[in-house]
Image 1: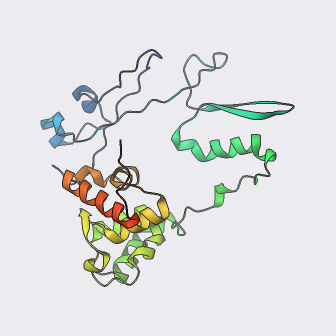
Image 2: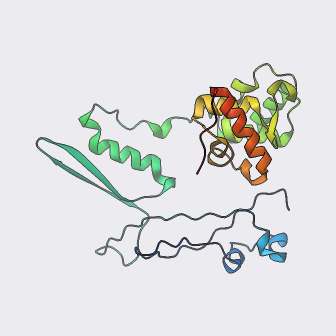
Image 3: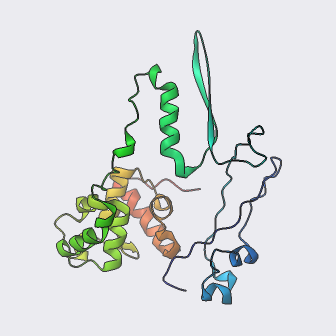
Amino acid sequence: MSEAAWIASAAAAPLPPESLAPPSLVPTQLAAMRGGPPAWLQASPFAAVFAFFFVLPLLLVAAVSLWPTRDYELVLNQGDGVAPLLTIYGGKITTHRKLAEAAMLKIGHYFGGRPPWTANSKLPGGEFLPEEYNAQVTETMRRWPFLSVAHAQRLMHAYGLRAERFLADAKSMDDLGPCFAGDLTAAEVRYVVDNEWAQNADDVLWRRSKIGLRATAEDCAALDRFIGSMSGKAAATAH
């Protein structure tokens, strides 16, 4: 299988409310990817090792358009002596920050919320300009020369400058502890558990990365045991 991680995007389709059957990626949808699938996928559509779907609630404003929109609408119900209820219709993950700010403008005054502030803020570890990313990868490899290019790039994508918190004074990969899948080290896992609320292997391999695409069942089991040992009990079982 190619080392590159290809993402196939299936076309959106309405899902009747009474239907609970999940959609699936089928060869015809894989073939419809923008620009066409890579050669290895054309040769064997079943080379795809991972697929997922999601249900997106769309907002239909009949007075404006006959087509649903991916925008959102906030409806606040309030009255004397009762707690306010904010209902969010529509929306999508790519606008979550703006949606959250709009929600706070509706309800923030109930508990002294701050005015919008995230537009010019930086994510933790992202205290550099986008065009400085390559320079940061180079600097990371200068400080920790035992890292491969791919490893340094992944750490900068995932953690930015905060990668130094677990790379610390390491002089070799051995100083970062055992590897569980690919270049995922014990030091990185400890950081994710302590700072990003990871509780089990799935949290680390799938919810905070996609390292699970290349992890074996043995890798997952070993990682669960390691996370469990950190708290002195078995890791929470993922379902």
